[in-house]
Every structure is written in structure tokens, then in C-alpha cells.
Image 1 (cartoon, rainbow, N blue to C red):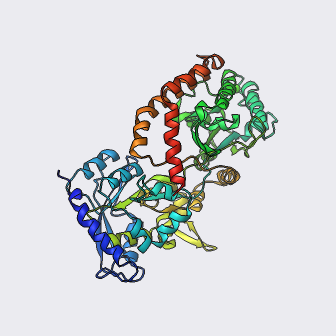
Image 2 (image 1 turned 45 degrees about the horizontal axis):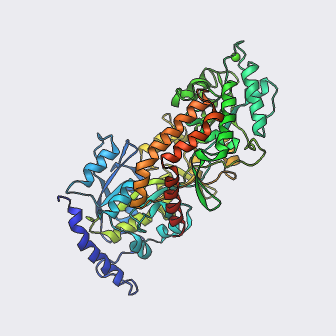
Length: 512
Ligand code: CA
């Protein structure tokens, strides 16, 4: 066995037991730390960080350079800029003799290698040295569930963001005006508006070429709540459920099929892909979509000269097809990504204090907004990004990412920061949906036994269900005559055992 971290597990467990032993006595001999700083002396720690196949830790990143002054800890990235595959980079690193002090990776990797002994369980260190991390674990929705592995230990501090609303219904206000239509308030009115878009030539070219409702992906997922159904996992009435086998999924699919058949839903919904919004707005063909607040209204500026009168706005949340409030799902506010401390790290106390800094008020301001006077100014006590950043030609988000503002370390990103990067119409949409969206179902941490069930069944079940959805929507198969056999098939494939595994794991996480 070449892995040094396996050899270190025992000695480290002893060292940590030592720390715990002096919990009530106060000072830990030899490692007392001066106020505010994570380390007495300047300390350099190595970090493996590479995520979303694009971002290796960069020693020049602004917030981390600034943090050296504030914490006495300097990070040194270990992943080369030429690396593009995050998972491969992680696998090479974790199998090597030289695992760095800090490891940043997916929750799945952190939980797995934590339980195998490559990472320190952080529970005691947090209790003793990290009040800000503790606060996030106790108070920020989903933070603890994400941080805690199935064995009850915390091996990583996850990356979180405020704000739940992510997508809403957007519509061409100029098309509503042209056809003298009111903003829809119910799903029925929305259907009528889309029908008018289809039939009454709002783009005025004499051709019936409008695509009333289009998506960049996963049509059914965002539309189904308006038909009182859900495509994925959810927890309701004390039970985890899989939406695709519930009876209301059938009625919802029949409604979706009707919309598709009448030309309201993009005929190429499954093939057009990620560029659909670009293409259909730019060609003045698309009328409505369900998409992100942070990017959709940008087309008002992008297309100002190209499509005269173009104006897309968020539709205030509508009721569902039965007149009820739909279960609109927000985004997951805690991401499956974060950092932890490897067993090779000889300074776990300083490191946890450093990690705690990034959840302090000062640390959060630094990772979100950068340096006052340079990247932001305080206006009425709140950080406001400089206009030259907001108007950066490469977009504000890209500008900030390039200098490390927003690097997905274990911290909480500010909703205020995101909102500064979108226009007023986008913010108006976000503000309308934020109070009505629900936290999405958070995939629980599975035990090894539960994982066996998931690994054996989940992929095949989802693939089958999604294929069926497509066949129904496009009319290749009749929903009424095949839904029962579809449910039977899913049961044969083990959907009930799968739901039980989810339910058991989810209830375990709720009880912690
Ligand atoms: Ca037309």
C-alpha cells in the first residue's frame, strides 16, 4: 500500500484525542493562536482544488492573497493550470504519496475518502475552534446535511449560497402588447396566451413560425409543477416519493402532451439543447421560457438593436392547472462541493481556524466582493461592486471568477452579490419568486447498504422513465394505454426498494 495517508491515520487519531483531552482546560500546549489570526507565524499550506473541470486554485487569486495578512496563512495550489478533468486530477492526487494539506472536491469524494481515512473528521475541531462554521452548520438550511457523511462525521465544509429562487417563467412583453393580451395569472391563462402566440403571428412575418414555449433542458421538470406533478424526488407527508410513479404524473403528462401536440411546446425540445434560448430569441421566434433570473433578461440588452421592441419579463408566479399554488422548486442552496483537512496536514487547528475565517463576516465580504476601494465601495453599509466590474466586457461574473472572487470554498455566497450582476427586470423576477419557491429535495447521505441498492437500480430506472416521458410527449406511445404497464415495469426494476433506500437515508439525516 503506497498511500501515506493510510499510515498517518493512527498517529493522527492519537493527536486529535490529545486535543480533545484538553477541551475544558483552555490552552492547547504549543499551538495557542493570537487573536484574529489563524496562525502565530506565517504558515504555508498546500491545497488541491480543481472543480467543474475548469478551475484550479490559483496562487494569485485576490481574496486568498489578501487573506494572508488577515490570517497568517498562505495557500499554495498543487493542480497545474493545464489540467482540465477535475475527477481525474482528484484520483491522481488521492492515490499519490503526497496528499496536500487541504483537499477541495465534491461532497461524494470528500465523504468517501473521509470515511476511508484520508481526511480528518472535523467535528471536534469545529466545536472547539470554529464558531462561524458551527453557526453555519446549525443555522444555514441544508449546510449540516451536506457536510455530514453517513457515519455522522464532517469531512468537508461545503460551499453555500443565499437565495432559493433560480428560475421563473419569462415571457415576451412586447408580444403580449402586440396581441393585446394580459399577463397570465393562472396556468389556464398561460395556456391561452401561448395559444395566441402560436396562432396570431406576434412576430408579424406572416408565417406561423412562432415557438411559444421552449426550454434549454429538462422540459418536464420545470413545467410539471404547473400541472400539479413533479418529476423528481420529494419529501411530503412524512415520506420520500418519486414523482414519476405518482398518479398525478400521468395526468400531468397528458396535459404536457396536449400542449406539445398543439405546437405550444417547442417541437425540438429534446434535441435543440443549450442554445435554444440564444437561437429562438435572436431569430424572434420564441415567446416564453422557464429559465434563470440571472441570465434571461440579458437578452433585452443583447437584442436591443437586432429585434426591435424585444422585451422579456418574468411572469408573476401563476397558480397551477387546478388553481392551487404549485410546488415550485428552488435551487439547492448548499452545493456538493467543499474543502477539508487531509491527514497529512500537521496544522489542523490553524487550518480549521483559517477555514472558519472564510465564514466570518470579514471573510465572507472578502470572498464575495474583494477588497474595499478596489473592487467594491460601501453604500449605506452594504458592499456594492464597482461599476467598472459590473460593466466588464467579459461579464461581471467572469471578471470576478478570474480573480478568485466566488471560488467555491467552504463559505456562503451572498444573494446581494448575485443580484448586483443582473438588471432590474431580472431582480424583479427573482424577488417575485423568492417567497414562493420551496427548498428542493436534498439527496441524503447513503450508507453502503443503501448505496448498493442505488447503484444497482437508479440509473436504469431513470433512463427508462425519461425515455418513456419523451415517447409520451411526442405521441409515439399513448399515455392512457401504457401508464399502468410503465409503473409495473418500474416496480420490476426495483423502484420500491429504491424509494425505501432514499426514505431511510433521508429520515436518518433528518434525525441528526
Ligand atoms: Ca410569425
